[in-house]
Amino acid sequence: MSIINVHSPNKVIQTAGTESAALDSIVKVGSPTAKRDPFIDSWRGIFHIIMLIDHLPFLLPQTLVIIAGFYEWIGYVTVAEGFVFLSGFVSGLVYTRVKREKGNRAMWCKAMKRAGVIYLCYVLAVVLLLALVKCIGRSSLDWLGWRMLFDLSWPIASAKVAALLYQPSFLEILPMYSLLLVVTPPILKQLERGNLVFVIVASVTIWLLAQFGIRNTLLNFLSARVDVFFGYFDSLAWQILFVGGLICGHKSYISSKPWLSKSYVLPGLALIFIVLCFVQHHGIWKFELSPGWVDRSTVGLIRLVNFASVVFLICKARPLIEKIISWSGFAFLSRHSLQVFAFHLYPIYLLAVAFGDNLSLPFALQLAFIAICIASLFQIAFLAEGFRLAVENLRVRVPRVNPKSFGG
Image (cartoon, rainbow, N blue to C red; front, top):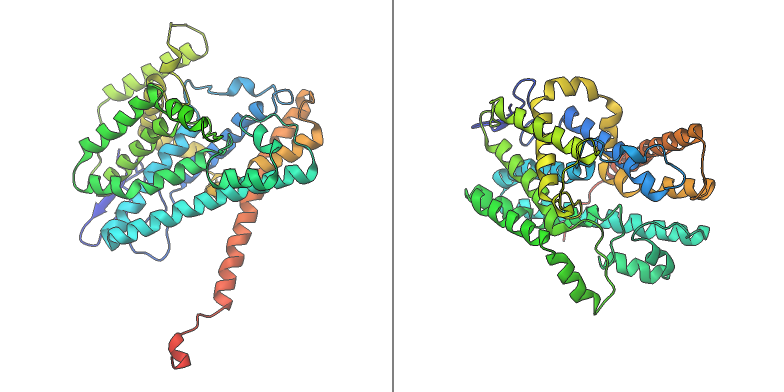
């Protein structure tokens, strides 16, 4: 299966047949407009909807009981892993292109700018939600990692969030992504030098340290001096998903021919492993496993291989899957992925206030609740699109002033 083909000397990036999986909005290097890959956009949109549904039983356990059984339905895999891996893949494509076209400085500037945007969006989303809770006066929601922020005064809580000392659950993936973008340029620099083994060994070593609880050791040290909460996800472990995606994205950009194995052995092994994880996770055939092997916060080994197997089969089956999931609505969510994810808790909170967070709802109303929450994702995307268009119109109407016109 081909990801992308790069042709010199013009360096035109093209998809290679129906099996192409270019994971970014790129058609031609240096083109003023970028054509997005609908396959990737569809997956992003689907990820947003599934993640919302995954979050609902944790946020409102008494209200929405009909979907609790769908969490990790395929095995030890959630869409959070998909988001992180896909972010790494896209970064590998984008920043490798920028480095080769414009140099290291441009790559660093672009990566830092994107990291800053993600950080600001994260802080804004959390701080405004805290303000909303304070204004409405309903802070009884027992959301994991939010309880302390609700109890603090708004200025102090906001300061903790801005300083990244407190990263509430369900959104902590954003500051992690921002920090991973900061280290993307040096990683790509090593990949460009051909130091692939060094990058893999470094990433795996950090992941292994996470398996032995290095983050908990650091947190215990810091907690004795300052109150901190870095969220559920262990960034030292989850970086392996991002770096894996980064390596694949870089490999896809520099390859002039398909690089995924065409053997039927690997897909077969991947399918067998996925089935084994499925029966184990759902108790159909139970094996004795240490919890650490499948731990989500530290991406245990079995969970990591389970995810890699699913990604591999999706890539191999792209021609079939693309026909099933292709929908412009998913692509629309994807175009405003950052805003949709950052603000997806708002409608859940408002509905919880309206319905009551501990209210038991009949089956029909639970379905209606879920439908309203999903529709709210599209509303967030519409608002983000409207804001984007307004900014573009403002730029067109306000001409740039040439300093030379003042004779200075």
